[in-house]
Length: 156
Image (cartoon, rainbow, N blue to C red):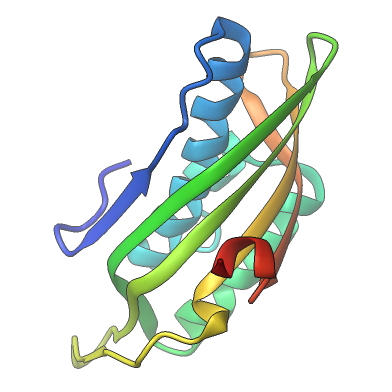
């Protein structure tokens, strides 16, 4: 997945130092990038989404991407993903939570390419809570995803 030149993602502190945890974190990050990629490509049915997501996470991400594409929008700017926490449950399931700092990310009109540089608000900070399952191909797919804008854990 190659993002446009004007879109950057920074996964700060996404190495646990444990091979099993690092594998989960890598695919959790790729699942997040798959959403960004689908938005920038204007494709809610992106193969990247289905590769890194399944279940309710995939359905929710497709709906989210579709809403942005239907509004003739895409992204521009940079998002910092940080404060990552991981819990493994056996060898085939895990939870990953993390914060997103979207203060430097903006909507961009697909037709005009105009970037809407609005000032940051508490909604520029998002707490993500995800559930991942190891599929038969060895990919840690995000199967459940919840997000909460303005969560105090991410705004501090």
